[in-house]
Amino acid sequence: MRKRNFYAVTSFLLLTLFAIFLNGAVVRRNVERGLKDPAPEGQPNYDAMFSDGKLRIAVFWGWDHPRDTIMGSFPAFETLNGKHLYYRGKPVLIEIGMVTQINQNPKSIFQKALEDPSIDMVIYSGHARYGGGMAFSAMDDIFRSGNGDLIEDRHVKPYRIFKAGSEDLDATQFSANTYKIIMLNCCDSQGHFRESWSRRFQECSAPIDLLTVEFPVFNLYDHRRILNLLRDILSFSNWKTVKKHYDSEIHKRKNRLIIEPVYIPFEADMALDRNY
Image (tube, rainbow, N blue to C red):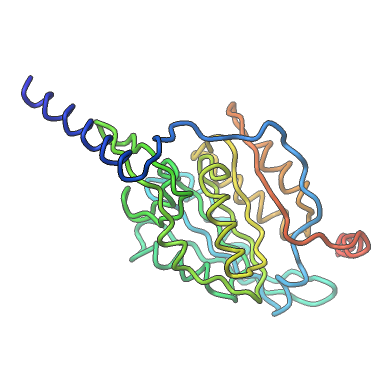
């Protein structure tokens, strides 16, 4: 037993030293969070989202997500899928697709949804893997999209040190001509992913609104947050309302949604949307 412990400690120290030597950086253990929580301006670009007469939404539940939470979203998704809403007097068909860890190669489907110009919203709800990326069919089946920090994987002992690279995100081609909403509903996605995802959007000149979270999410109630978001989008709400409804679902844990809009419509346009 003593010999086994010695090998475990030695391996951990060697891996840590190697990682630090390789990157010339320290291991990040704390996620940076904002001191202020400003209310976002404007609203989603509904004109762009509904221009083709469809609202197409792809919802991804990540690895190890509570089954009851996923099942809690079924009734609403089944009710909405195939229905119509009316925007500026024209019908818009609602299409909702859901992918979980039991689907074949969900990570690949996630990347395709991000690249597909016909999909208006991509929602991921699951683990952030300490900033490594979105986890899909397994703990290590990660869509690598981190900020490049050295981080600790605390699911194993001794802790594993690895670099939160962005290889999968960098290989994703976002359309420069298509507006999209992407929600990363995972622990501290603001601190883990805002930098890398915003950089990639800029490289592709993609007009995308990114919704991220400060503080850990509470997986048992994630379906409520997702359904709140869909309800607000279907009622043409502004970003301030979207944030308010998300932040209210804290369930004894501090939480807040961070939105930095890419589109700020004229006040007259927002007033017209509220009439429908």
